[in-house]
Image (cartoon, rainbow, N blue to C red; front, side, top):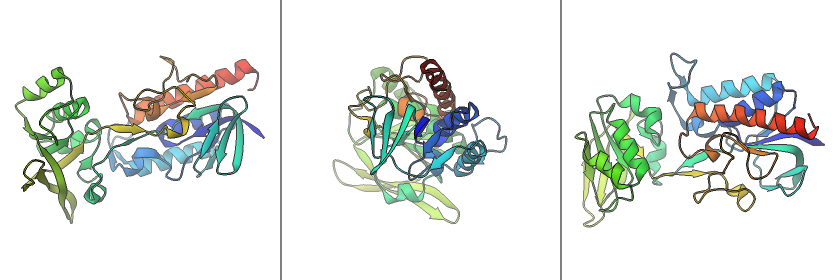
Length: 311
């Protein structure tokens, strides 16, 4: 059987693409992956998505997305795609030894924040540890936080957090930053930011009742000296990695791995293959922008299929 649309990945982009293609009677099939829902599954309070005046938990929001697409008959398979063949149509998608065929593909595999690798990051994830200042900065009004990183992202996060936090520590493992000079100058000129160089986070400290971050243990990368610093929040800003390994040498991507699309569309370099959400977005990385591009991908796919005489 050749499907009209196969969606690889879930999250806001994938579910929105599924919703629109299903309502267009394209009968999409979605491979949600082994951990469906994307980064929102490890997000606690979501307060910046329209339509939820009291906020909503990330996993609860993804459950609502899923239930909505299931209402329109979307076949969701909690399976992980292991290989693709986009050399000719119908396109082939492999789940181990099983092969699925489709006339169009929507990719919404998302991106993952890079972490330090501490167990305490997992323990306090969503309870004081975050990788998104624009998502979670509001929860740290008049509190002290620490940002980890030395690139433009870390500088942007630190500057943004000063709108909410009373103090922002910016910690970097080296003495020099990778960030552009203009970004460094902005941070250095900000009275609410204190720079700590030649240091790493050795451990994130916290309490269990209630579960929250209370501080960090810093390690001097030159002397090895340890010291505790009381903070309420830890923001990891060492970059994101798009989940695009599956499409290496298949689709055009930038040096980091973000899939490249034709400006103003979700079209990749292969006609009939579309990319939506964080896997193709190195700039915004928000649930609402992911959902928006999921809608775009669905409409792009519908128009492509119509032009090809498949819909």
